[in-house]
Length: 266
Image 1 (tube, rainbow, N blue to C red):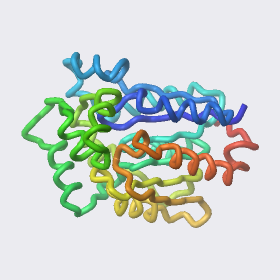
Image 2: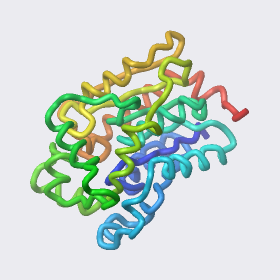
Image 3: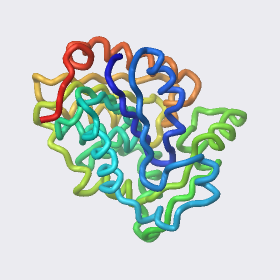
Image 4: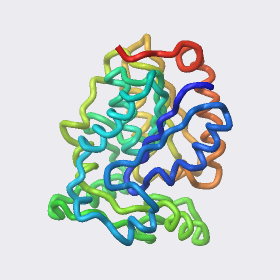
């Protein structure tokens, strides 16, 4: 058995979004876990129809606490793969030396880093809108196809929405941009791979690249890869296998860290 991989979903998704990836990596010999954020457990269709009254109050700190508890319960440090806000959580776990390697896909950036493209500004402002208070963000098909999965066709988008989309708390993104989203990116860290989608409107490729280049420790591994014609829905849109295969190949290049030498918690 190779290492354990913990998959961390982002906003507007839940563990359902990782099912294909878990099958892929289990077939490669990895032990795989995909925890749900609080209030994100269950079938996406049911969650859309029955949103929790507490969803709008959910904070990033609560999400991270659940993930950290899981990671600490493991017998050794895992590999962690995260998407969007999950990518920021990957970076946080790396900052705390809790993982042996991390892959941040279409990641929200730490330390208030932003992109000045209009789609990013528009989507960020819509999500963070302070006038909305603790009202949840209700994901609908038009928004999903227009911003989240903008590379999908009119035939593909409804099925993808029905299968994976959920509503979410705008406080998660607010926290990402605030104090809880601050990291020390100058210290040594485990190997990190940043993956971007060329047509991502939520976490643009330029921002993901800026995030990767912000890590300055010369003795730590940082890699960046961008995939053409991919949206923020990169983990499930057609061609996801190419992304997963590239990540697995990168892990093999880090095998002295992630395969041959199990790392225990102190």
